[in-house]
Length: 381
Ligand SMILES: [Zn+2]
Image (tube, rainbow, N blue to C red; front, side, top):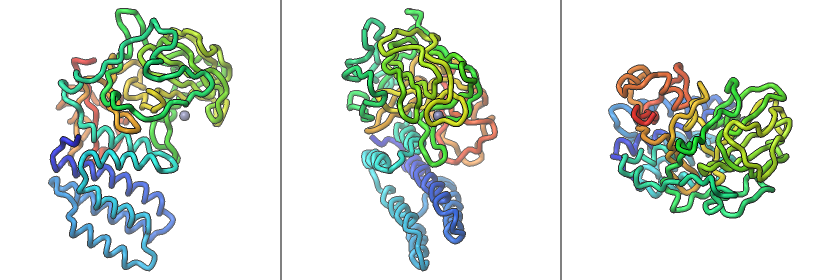
């Protein structure tokens, strides 16, 4: 499973460790001594893990652990995570996947971290690998699209599918739009993006938020069949559409529902009117993209700066509980010391604007050494 060399392996460790440290900095921010310790470790990691690709040595890690243990009240979480860090350095690829799995046992699953690790562990399949992936065939003729993949058609529960990619879902090619059938894509609503997919206020945010006015029409992103339309807890009034491309999209906090389960909708058809129902502060659309219940970052398929699709074919690389999603033809760039967006964009013949759109970052975002950036293949656009 693991194909990277030793250097890329240690960059993965940095991703894991860096995210753990970020969590720790937050967790310990009320205790200045611990914060100082954590800050020192972050600096230590920056200087030692990443300089020249050299890894933090076992001896130095042991020294840090020893020094922590001499504290009157050693930070138990930090100790535990450093011990974990020491353990995962020796892991095989399959064990890293198990580590990702263990993150799902947390009370709140850190999807952003999991996605980042997934992307890394996936090690961007070569074009040959991708062509060996399973194409999901467009299923417009079906009464219930993709019931062969999803199982029973459930109209009473929007999130009834196990988030467990099956072995046959290890590499999927999703044909987002079907050109010959004139089936397209429509951004559900034009508006200001107020929240991205990922981690927010210590909780996973499984979709994106787009500002709207109450009564604004909300449109189906792709053609398909409505699977759920009703009130669902924090989501408020929610519509779920199963699309002919195999994905499901969720439209939450609606003020009015305009469709019922079983309705056939085209891309751009109004499925509801925007609002603030459920757990919502202020009117907005909460929009999710899922495959078999697993949330996928919408910015991996939609350019959120202009509401256009990034690609016709989306690659889903499955691990046990989640997917790494990226447009077909995408390459990875691992950020090195001294890299900046303009130079990276230029070296791949793309633009900073496209780079930002594909990676869900802004021009002012700070790049981390070891971070994976998706690079669109010009020919696939
Ligand atoms: Zn939201």
